[in-house]
Image (cartoon, rainbow, N blue to C red):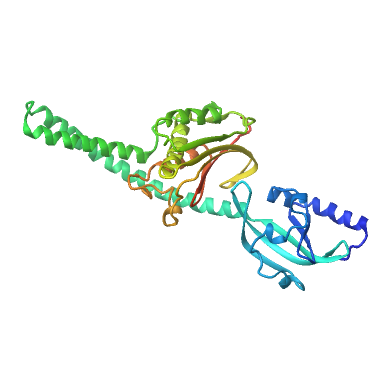
Length: 354
């Protein structure tokens, strides 16, 4: 592309600014000279902020030597960009030799592939979770029936013994253990809610949950709230959603018990967002971020399966129950984790009638 006069340059930039693809042009000194609107939005920074900086400031490690793209186009897939708000997105990037403003340089075309990856991963994980959840619920129902029989028989035996009888102590142990197992099975089956859905404000939901955990919050953990007050009320089963958010916040607090840090709860709205196979015009997002120990890689892909946990005293039921609640609201929970930063994003669709 030969472009030497000012009007031609402005025309090219006008075209680039109309693209949804992120475009960056760097000169022959490997310095950034132009970002289109889509690139500014992707990197969350203006052109003036990165003007004349080395291209590697935006895309470190993308390509070992830019001269490899001096004669032909080079495409890099599965590149990860760290954003200022601590999120990461996956992209594909094409680097092409390009002359602009009378100078030789390179054109970077960046395609956001995060949405495609997320849809595929969510679909796969949800099918796996459904299969595991069905198995656990079937087992829970099968276990619950004999437990009820054992408890009933134990109570009858207790009535046949006189107070102070030595055998009563053993029967009491049996009774307590059966009740403990019954409660565990009930947890596996999920919250006992009538699923009565009414319109509620998600910030009121979060405020209520924070009140519940106030006594459990370690003194070295500080809560930071970052709300979008424009989010309308959402149709939800309030009690079930309290349980779902409570499980996530408790996990975050437990992850920060040793070293402390900030528990950040952020709410936002996403536009034209796909959950599963359906795209919604608006989706509310509750992000619960902690600065704790992170989730071990060995269990990360299975954290929404029942009975999977990395905690010594954990039951592995909190996250599956939360995910189950969100699915009943046509929503989803997605996790990201590394040492010092774990994020659980709770997606709730804002339906037309709301």
